[in-house]
Length: 402
Ligand code: NI
Image 1 (tube, protein in one colour):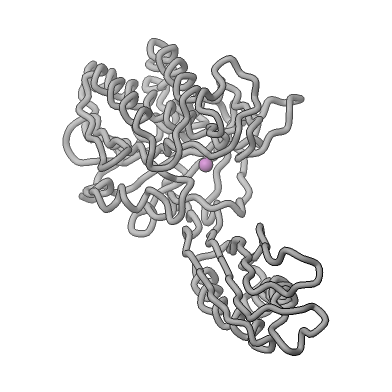
Image 2 (cartoon, protein in one colour):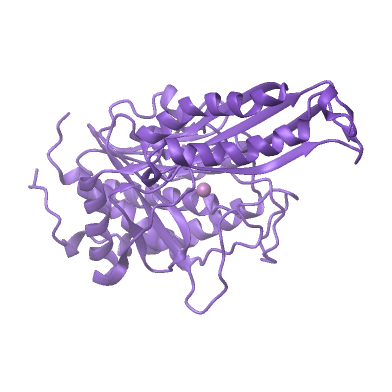
């Protein structure tokens, strides 16, 4: 086994190996895009992944429900790679010839791209292994239900996705980074994201006599203001705790105090410790903000995901791979996103790194994730495949601790 090195080894570039399978992967991606499926319902997607892997001579394993795991090579696992496969309940507005045929569902977060990139890596590694043994194993996890909370990553882990896995890497499309480049960051790259739902109940009554009942709308408004304000004072402000409401519903008439009201929103946080602290404070703040008004309060705090915290070594592996495959200017510093990403669960016990895959066309449309009009520049596909495949190959050359 050779010594581990971050130096470029031009003889092992992935590009030439990708060439013969790129058309298949692109077609696969367009087919997935046309047939998006929601979290834990990715049955067709799972079948398609499975078929392509089998016809490449691999032996994939179906996960319970949806999702696939496949190992390429033999011997100890050097790394796992993960691609998320689900779509969003959003109407597609791209006008693409291969736009969603499943109305109201679209791959607005680029997970069709992530899935295709992972398939591409599997096909490339399979060909390489056929040519000469990889000298270890790479595991690819096609994970369902990233868009739910707490996310499908946990069910993959329960089903052994990480057994024998010393590290894991992943990518996510980024419409703010130029296509042809990747974004990396050591430390937290996404944020914790929980959902909060608060229900208030009172007796209701006439708006002329709030003192004889519980003024439920006023109490809702008070909680809406107090919770974000108090948390921003009680938790270290550098942890970026941010509570933002997405829904408030109560009442049906201008002169009737309603008996029931509900509000919901998200609580995001940049670091893992503050995420725990804010969660514990939330209940206290909600109860105390509501208390003066006499309403009954029911708080539903659904823990989402912790932040994805990228390890230094795996991030360096990805950066070195990108520079070797794509050139020295192909790596940019990615900012920490306030978005949540359930890849974080995979990193609870092992190191790993999530990289950003640039999809922005200079001078082109400005897009954002989770929008019906998000168009991913397909040139990004080979970028993602080459970088993560090269990173996986580098891990195969590392002396394993296992
Ligand atoms: Ni996503």
